[in-house]
Image 1: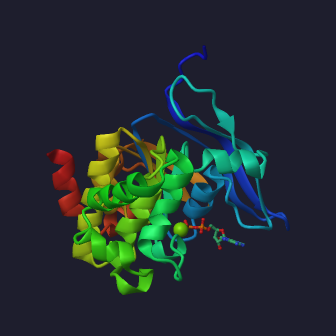
Image 2: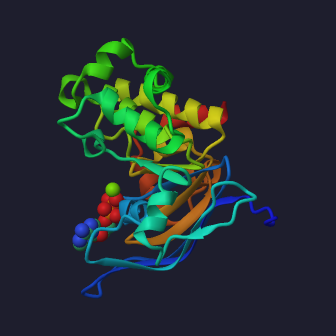
Length: 276
Ligand SMILES: Nc1ncnc2c1ncn2[C@@H]1O[C@H](COP(=O)(O)OP(=O)(O)O)[C@@H](O)[C@H]1O
Ligand SMILES: [Mg+2]
């Protein structure tokens, strides 16, 4: 038996450099317990996406990570070190230990393949489903992300549905293999404000229902504070401050965090949610 360890993700001294030696993320440490939520917030270019990609071993070519990133599928499962892991090992981890939803759902979707076929792929691969059971699972996955008319969506190509619908499909794909950790990188930034709050509410509900850990990445502190309980503030690739959403929003210590608080859109509604 392995000793129980509550951390779904444990990042220690993560440093990301280009092959030319430019440091883009430096000495970052944080952890997320099973079922807990952490927001990663910072201005554009602060290193949020690179951090998210590093967690899944998906850094672009020409970049390397050092330090340690451990993913754990369950508190009694052994952790797996992502840095230095083989591609085969990483493929086994992505999906079950952690999956990601990006800002632009089209990056996750194949433009030439119908939605139903794309959604079937992780269900077939991870859950071994075939035939009618697979078709039922595809329909259920679409229902779960509240897509109306699943028959139509199943037959549609990505360009035939709206941006909000595409992000719901991307979310359904990310959830298909029941990951321990969901990474959402600006998942609603490209959406209209009303659609944005619908997709946020959906994500919030699904993460709670499944007891998943969540790493939520956004430049918008108001959005981050509406779905997470703890926040890490990134500036130029380094952590400047971290704490509970309540502390960060009400008592920011660092001037940069104060600027983020001041510039956060919809801050009042975020505060209302915190007070609630
Ligand atoms: N493929 C890349 N090659 C070189 N530099 C990159 C690459 N991707 C990102 N960067 C740089 O790394 C820094 C952090 O980028 P990123 O993590 O995408 O920021 P964020 O997601 O916070 O907006 C930025 O300065 C960006 O220019
Ligand atoms: Mg980004």
